[in-house]
Image (cartoon, rainbow, N blue to C red; front, side, top):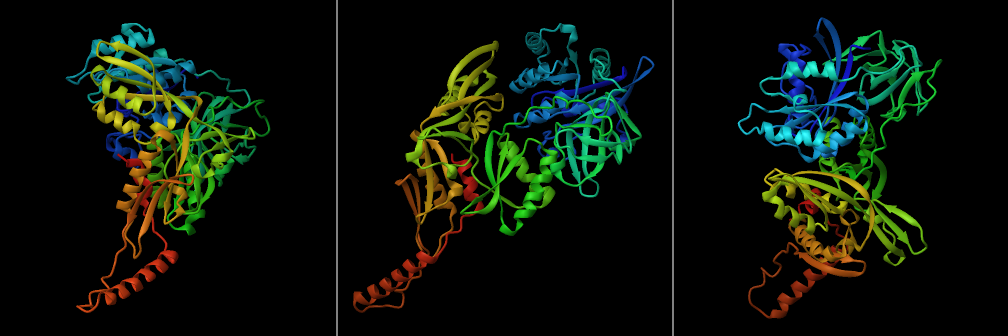
Length: 595
């Protein structure tokens, strides 16, 4: 075990984690020249297209140093705030971390939050300055920032370039010298932590684990500690570019197990694997349960596909443990699922993966957050969906989740960012200058205000320079109103939203105008209304497509024309009573792009 090193790579989004991982794999000859490509660990099409890492990826490398062979287990992690759960799982299964900082941009918000995650698990941190070959690199300034943040020495900071491969051998040397060897006992009862899993249509569920204590041999009878399910270890092995079968996996190793698990319910990420005949006495402290930030309904376009959608979401949940879901129904959309996501990008990625990997076409409703309602009787109700809100007469108070948002930006963009945060009902808590032209501001603001378009607006007003990170701080009482959208007098529950009372009028008016553009014209007038309770606050009308029934009247008395128009009016009235309004998918998403 003294020759094993487990480490992960953490950084802000776009600071070059995957590029450095590529160079490490090339330096240790884990990847042959024939298999070489950019972002080699990012195996999903989506990751290649968007240029971001969505999943953590584990891989084993072999490296010879001072005549001894070392086994290096690397986990490359995502950088976006929506995938921070992946980062926390990677950190829980490592002893060290490479903290990558972009020399052209310096320390950003996600750098700090990922660093605190790693320090919370007592990981050995190796700071690395990346992109030092760029003309805009500010090597000395960024080194000062890193020293201020970590309290390390200047000579501890490695300088590297993922593009040219400069500094990669020194990085491998630092990993072997500085990262502690795994602690564990090969002869103790088996304890292995499941940190990820995928579904293979031919072999069932494949679980990835890190062995803390004991040894797992092929053919052993094992059980999962929390679910109690028992299986045979049909195949075990280690993770290289492909899976490599082995006869045994020992303490300190990272590997995979295939045991013919058919159902996704029988395995949970964070569970402990142990032997049936010699079990360990307690489960490993896994990761904390993830708290979804944004809730949205996902419905099949065709209601017959409901069961297929359930199977698809279950299989997707195996690979993405931060996705949570429960069944729900809507009057407008039929049966579907209420899903919890970590953010809007996470929601977009899940929707895209359902379409690509399982061929499921879905309708997504307006995203919202969860609220705590105290009724007049003193009961506390948690509401994820505006349609689940009790009657206004029964509500004593509504509390909404608040976050602490940490924004790091260049000082020239400070004014517009302050305005944006205050518009979103934020209150300034702290402002401090990290360097002469970089400032960190902390705001307390409602989570509901950032789930729509806050991040996009922040990026555009700061020309992409501001970085943003947030964490939940609790619930606070708010003056909220439930805004309903009515089409011809019928409430469309999928378009209802909970909104601050001062904003309701503007929002309702904009919503009606937007829906007027998107709803196709019918043979009858469609009234679009926004209402709070029984009070209508805005209205638009989609005019009917009319046939010119008076065309064949030329001359004669006006009563001839009126007779024909009255006859048409009666027909339209009847049609309106029995006609139904088709609401296109764009209308549900239009709410997001209100401005």
